Amino acid sequence: MASAQHGIGRPGSFEEYAQRIAAKTKEAAEGGASLLMFPEYGAMELASIFGETVEADLQGQITALDGLAPKVDTLHLELAAKHGLHILAASLPVRVPGRELSVNRARLFAPNGRYGHQDKIIMTRFEREEWAIGGGDGLAVFETDLGCMGIAICYDCEFPLLVRTMVEAGAELILIPSCTDTLRGHGRVRVGAMARALENQCYAIVSPTVGKAPWSPSVDINRGTAGVYGPPDIGFPETGIVAEGRFDEDMLLFAEIDLDLVAQARQAGQVLNHQHWVEQPGADLWPIPPVRTFDLLSDPDASSR
Image (cartoon, rainbow, N blue to C red):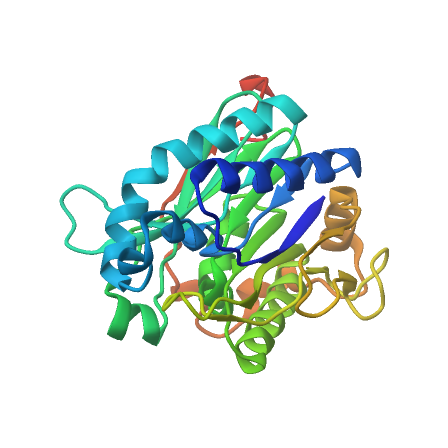
C-alpha cells in the first residue's frame, strides 16, 4: 500500500489538481501498491480555483467544494480503474439533504467501479466552533478484494469504541486520513492509531496533510508523517511500527500489508487483546451499534459474511 503525505498545494484549475492526483496515483501503482490513501481535507486545496474571495472564506469553501464533489469522485473512479488500485480519496465537506450542517466525508473507490463512504463522527473544536461542520450518523466497513477495512477520520481514531465497532463488523485494516496543524495534534493521531492497532490486533494506517498554505483558513498549517502500525506481536515489528515517513515532506510511504498476520495474532498471539476485549468491566453492557457494509468486491460471493 501507499500512504500519501500530501503537501497542500494551490492549483490554478481543476485540471492542474487532477494532474497532480494522477501523478501520485501512477507513482503508487508503479511502486506496486494496490491501495492508495489520501488525507483528511486534502481536497481543500481546490478552493484556490475559485479565487481569493472564496479561498479565504470558510463557509464559501464548503459551498464551492460541495459543487465539485461529483467531479472529484469521477476523477478517482477513473484513476482507480486505470491503475487497478483501491483509492481512499482525500476527504472534503459535503452537504447532506435534510441536514443543516455539512459533513466531512471520505470515499473509498475500488478498481471495479464500486465505492462507498465514511463520514467523520466526532468533530474537533475547530470544526464545531469555527467551521460549523457536523458529525456523521453512522459507521461503515468496506468489503474489498484486499480485505475488510474501516475508516476512522483523524480525531475519530482517538475514540476506542468507534474503531472497535468496525472491528466487530470484520475490519482487519483501519484507514486514518488526518489533518493536524501542530506536533501535538499529530502526536494524538499517532498514539491513537497505535493504540487501536494494539487493542484490536489489526493494522492502522495514517495519511496526513503536510506543508504550509497561509492563504487557506482551513488548512493553513499542516504537520505530520504517514505511518503504518500493527500490534507489537509475533510477525509484526517489536515496536508495532511497520513504517513511517519523513516528517512534513510531500511523499508517498510504501509498506507491505499481510492480513494473515492479523489472523495469526488474533488467534495465537503473545497476548489476545482482540479476544479479551469483552472481559473489561462494562464491556458486556456496551450495545454494538449497527454498521453499514459497502460491498466493493469484484466477486460478491467472496464476502466473509
